[in-house]
Length: 271
Image 1: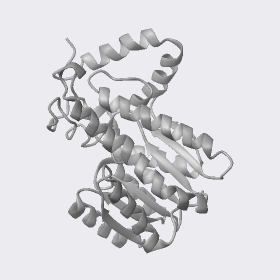
Image 2: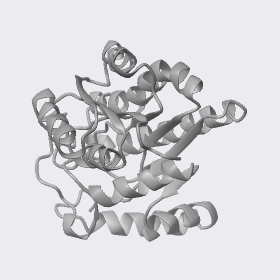
Image 3: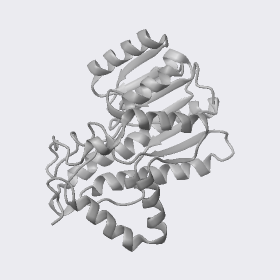
């Protein structure tokens, strides 16, 4: 797929993978509709992209947990550009707490962003994507293939996203649209700093070794290539590919490996 002059919507575009995706699409000559809750940051990013890459771009304040915000994001894209070619469902939030200690509202908050945000934006964008025979991307996670201890809500939301996109893909086998499920491994971004603790407060400090992770820029470049090549699924790391393989053929062994890996975190929740 040639990305020049394509109209691309990206949620969660004010930081992390979303911001990197905005930059990479701008480099390809795409025009952008960027959505995020942090509107001031988003406006600065949008202005820089217009100036640096000579593209058209618009910032839209959007909380993907609100159905009306997602509708307005899509409507703004149509008002500004008249069509939508690519929707990137990237907005996401994580959590870190054992389920036994966690207020159920934490799981609901994570599900509202990661799953329902994807559903809302996709629902409103789909008629336009069908017209353009475009692409829908969900930025998921290896946690959508293997449940991670201390991240029950996050894993559940990503399993739900994967199932939703998989079913949607089959529904649209004959419509000409492309649906991509992108699954990074652990990525160095602020998602762990903003991860929810057991009471719903932000975790603050990351408990993982950020320096050993993929960067958001690396993830964005892989997703761009996946869009161009109309890939079905992207499993981005060797560890991720091994996880998917072991989960299919040696799930009991994988349980132990995952437990041991998470137990090595700083301030581990596993005793």
